[in-house]
Image 1 (cartoon, rainbow, N blue to C red):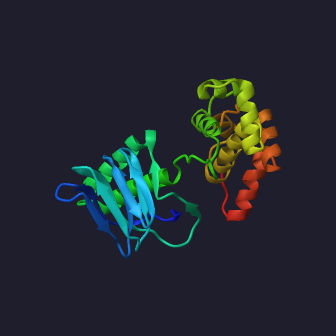
Image 2: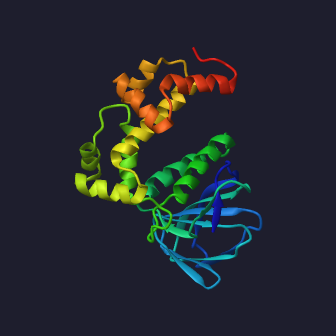
Image 3: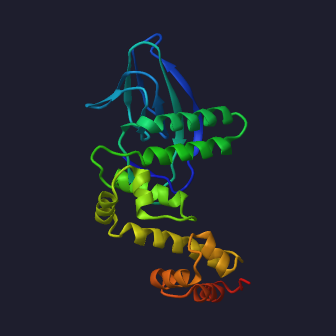
Length: 261
């Protein structure tokens, strides 16, 4: 199904559903609302001729006006959210049913906070559910279509957290749990960049933001993005942005009509 998450959803209801007590199945359809479920039981979900096994930690997302049949094996509990998604924005293809695996604990925390916030703070509940939807949309898929290689994703996450300090390819490889050579090969194949080039790119992108949006000195910005040597910082900016740090800041002044000290 196609999911669009560029704007927060409109959450109509969220709670914990209890089923399978008086009947072993339900037929359910919401004409105007999406259904998000995080399961804590074993059963099955049917959409037409398609049957999806339900296991603890599985998450489903069903579009509006879709008839679904739930099959239970005794008392069955799940988190549920009924919501509207807005048109426009980037489309993401998401399966009806996914195994959230290690993410299921985090999803349960987000949905639990949303459920408890609903009666008193709908905006807080919406924020929690929006975060949960992003996690659902970005769960790894078995076929890997449109997803970064898991080792590359782990390496990129490590880089983001450690961007301000000393950072080498062996550091990243050790954190991911593979050899320097293996990381270099996989990273280049997936991104078209070396790990060193990616680290430089991310540091300069963060530096550009600070140059254009803050009053920090060039020296302070260089240190803040992990390139304390000004000559190296200047070289990195010229390579990635085509201009020196001061020229980048100057161009920002001209473009916005107000100066940064």
